Length: 330
Image (cartoon, rainbow, N blue to C red; front, side, top):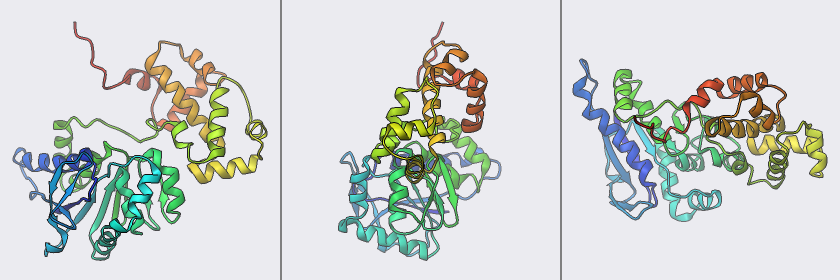
């Protein structure tokens, strides 16, 4: 498979190198397999001979116009811009217009397009995701949904494969994106690469999403999130919240659906799950105490919600803890 990593000035250092290292690891481990596939041919391409990464490193590149052979997959890593306004300004700027146009041309030529994190905005700006399902970084879902209404965005997903395009979520999802192209060729090799690189199982972005962050872009949704968070251990209705915010239940429902892709009741559950997860990982409170703390009458309701919306049991959440904390020895 011929893979091109398409980069522009400001490419995020981690995302770019994560994709590169995943394919390099796959090639390095081919000798471990009894019946290995052909090596991956990976090139870093751009409109010119080099770009500067987000941290100022010079990245030598192959000019895209100088490539005569077919490219099977073109991957757009993230760019080092985290805020929505700056990202929209970047992808829509005249400077990057040629970059966006080349993405569109590559799609028309039959190249499978892929992107992760903020790089997904380049695909969407080129119209390459119109009429398709896609994901993006969890905190950018609302902005993505407003700017690209023709895309069916599911920001909870880590990875989303559609016809002709594959998208991945936030930063670490670059690893999942690269592995998603190795797995169809050799599932055994993909598993081996994941084990060598210590890539853990991550089901979705939902557990990482911070409700107050994803609510920021819309004043009404932000006020709703704040109102709920201040009354998390109380029993209240959507009508109570709407009345307190000086709006109607219907207007509140429209706002959360348009901004977050979910009704108010589901967003309340997300806020409560976020707080409960934090308490499970950082305290020794009982399940009944945690349930009461986040507004549920009993622990059974909270257990069922974790199963339904996270696909995990309470024991699994608590046992996982914070995975970056080392286990004490001795």
